[in-house]
Image (cartoon, rainbow, N blue to C red; front, side, top):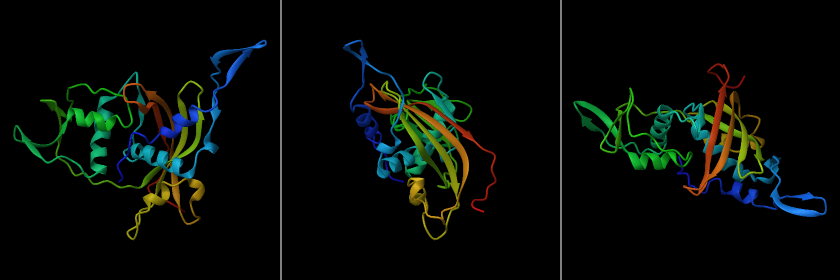
Length: 236
């Protein structure tokens, strides 16, 4: 999987900076910017949509359910971070701790990886699955194989008029092939899919992006995925 950069959503900032609207009172224009949601989907290129699809697909791959900046779920963030390492093939070497085997993750590096998505600060503590000591998270050794068979397709993008953006999307699962890697095809905008590309609709997602003053790039402020009850087969 290609490494993601923090400039992934920079196009959103550029779109948001274009031609701010001003409110008129009588004959005089004020400095107040009108906060009115406007759909900007048609302003985005297929390349920009593909980048956003890939960015969000990394979350749907692990069944990530929800995020709220004001109410963070540390267990879900730890699981996501682990899978992001796995996607990149960068799971740290095994260490033995008190007779058990773990993959160690440096706290700062782990947080930096999550900061591609969220302006979050993990608590320095473990839980029923993870250990934490000496500025390091420890996850019990396990197989890290996964199937790249899900994609999020961005359907609509809105400029909320206040510096934030709303994205509405759908989540699909497609059939894997022994002959070829189909993921790069399915992460392309759905308008480019060929008739032979069968996929099951398995969920919907809404995402709010905001600019993080600390990280200096767009991050997810709210994320909500709702999965449907579907069978494991794809196509007809």
